Amino acid sequence: MKIYHNPKCRKSQQTLELIRQSGLEPEIVEYLKTPPSVTELTSILAMLNMEPDELMRTGELIYKQLDIGNMDISREEKIALMVEHPKLIERPIVVKGNQAIIGRPPETVQTLL
Image (cartoon, rainbow, N blue to C red; front, side, top):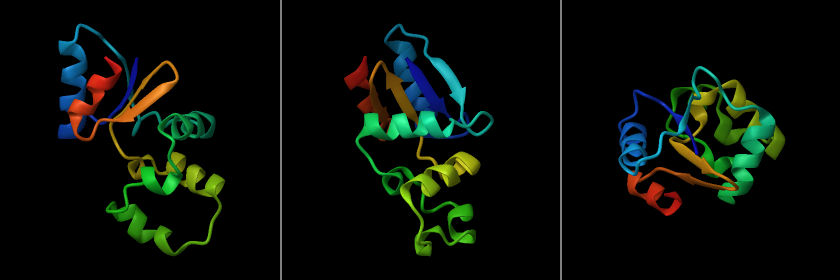
């Protein structure tokens, strides 16, 4: 099990705590320090059955500064932007095998435990 984690995010902290309470110790990826690769993020999107727009944090300052909402760019370009600016990636993401969930609310992680 792997969690793409932001230690400053309350939901991410709560999701990690629920995983640990279940007796598991996940691999923790602080994705702001170590962003996923394009390949990893593409795989995560497939596991989530989502498009990049659905995983993008549209309220982030960088989203507004880059005016991403008005860009006419491809799926691949959106993924590349998320890798380049990991603050754009919704969090936390928990991956187990070929399944992934977004821990919002944190209790959704229980489907993977």
